[in-house]
Image 1: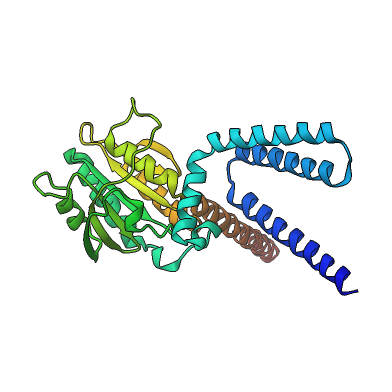
Image 2: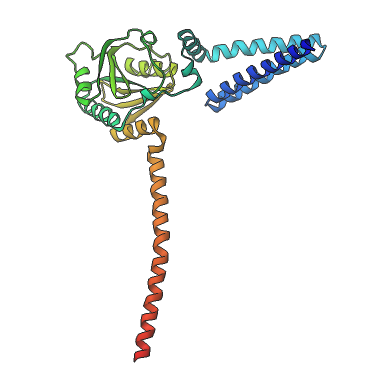
Length: 300
């Protein structure tokens, strides 16, 4: 009796752990094509397990195993960046980042958006290169960079950002790390991306490199040659953008409820509600006016 109870407990734990891992993978994958690849791979793994467990088919089992091995190697090459990031997070013990838990201390206020936008706009007008990394919950640490930079730990302001990226300062070539409403460090050297090497400069490659590894951070880039503003997020670069567009993107990334689309929808709904409230009042006034005209005619 105890033996069968132990077997049932092992089967229950096996199903529970496998289901938890599957749910975690499917919730973390956002791109549709990647989700399709993951579904196909898990289907092959399930098929191989079923053939080995319940079917006595040696040749079919070998073929399915070889197919799963080939697919595993292909996915390892295709997802080498994601797998490297996963191992780095596991090695540093940041399970909260893997699970996707956003920490409150990394949430910025509207003042942060204004200071970032103002500084980026003025740097763009003066054609001074800049690279600002904004941590939204990736819990960036010194070991995530090639060089952690010089600690600053100061309240964010546009004047301080302008001084840090001034041409005659020793920290202007590196990146500035921002968490919440504070500037953590300056002169940070970021890992470079391998995509678009022939199209982008060093600052843009550094912005792509850090956002490829950590999906909960963004980079604001100002080109030194053209003064073009860019925003890197999840390994993608949006350029060129204006200061107002940058402000809208920052608000949307940090708080989707305050995005311009949400605001326009709420404004439209409020206009509709106001118009619906006005229509009965107009109808009532028309009725009152008609009654007044009837009373005048009766007096005549």
